[in-house]
Image (cartoon, rainbow, N blue to C red; front, side, top):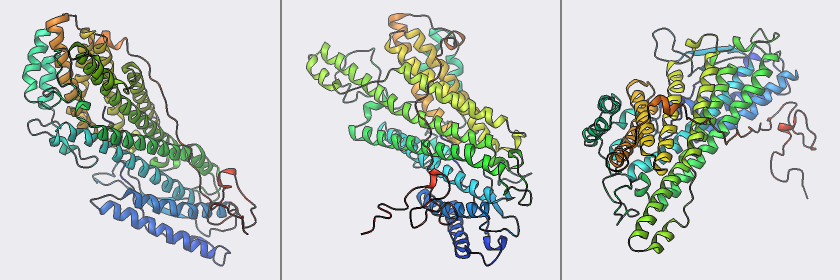
Length: 531
């Protein structure tokens, strides 16, 4: 199960000097200069990131986290009238989720009046950084699998380069070879599916089912299929587990940031006297640029949680595949040399049921459905980037197809080969359609890989059914009626608002506080414990 997090393009921003907007000779004059200086560092980090071939997300993250206490202090000082604005603070950000203007290929640079616009966009950028870092960890785990199975032709060497996922004999981005195989395979009869398997196996050959791994060595059972985990060492599995765990944690942190922006910060912006109406009126959410509207930010929460769940399913599905392989090895050893060796091989193997994994995968699909519904609630959907909308829409189809493959594996283990074939065939059809039509490079590359896995398993199931069980293959309509409902596991990790560098929310030297509980924290360990 390959995860498909949306690759966020980090925004850039124009220069600004906050001193130009504020009355001179204030007690916070030095602090205002610091706000401008730290914002300049953030702008430089974003520009370097944009023009670098090797993205340093940690550098951008540090620049944002250093800047946030300063902009938070500015917001609180303005609200408490410790600072007085002579002109409405106006900043410019490139809205990377907005549709390009007219015939331009670049997203618009949107200038907006409000210090809250600056604060919200800064936090959104931090959320995007967490999402992109999580994407990198997730893709790194997938690349380990590609290298392990010898699929170096599809190794991306990085994140998001969908064009490099084309193999030497198949152009997966075009999808012509895949669609031809699936079209003939959907004819419905066993003989038609068998001929499809023969014709497509030569063009989609990989190591998955062609070589006996160390686990399956000596197996004489013709009803045993291979798994990509057969080619992963224990070190590989530990590394993949760590990377997916880290990715899931970063996704949950991103969801927490987006949740804070959508549920706390934007409502404060709308109710504040620091709106975009000359500094005195209260703004409305619809008047804000589309990137900072509540519906769009809430959609990011769903995407982040969906991918966090997908990483969890990915981890569990790898363990399930590994456990299945060990169980098959145990059965083979019991039938041949004795049960002792097989029992020791699977003693430590634990497995999550494929049905539960399918439910979790459907839960991911439902998160994307909710996200797409939130995007459609925007007054003008065309204001949102078509690439972003296409990714969210196609991800629903992708994760539903993944759920079908997991249900197919459950049917296979239950020896319901006709049902397993039907489920895998339906999944293949969805993956093929995505390869041909999706505009999202990450989804195209992931769908092409998952198509290959589903196709080879479907061939193995068909071989068993044609020679042993002769079960009827149910139709797609019949299979969809037994689809389970989705399940959730993870929640957003609450964003901890940092202590501002100045203003009424700052913790004073005597331990007194101002503001809400979220900022009433010690600036460093043992603060005030002087000897």
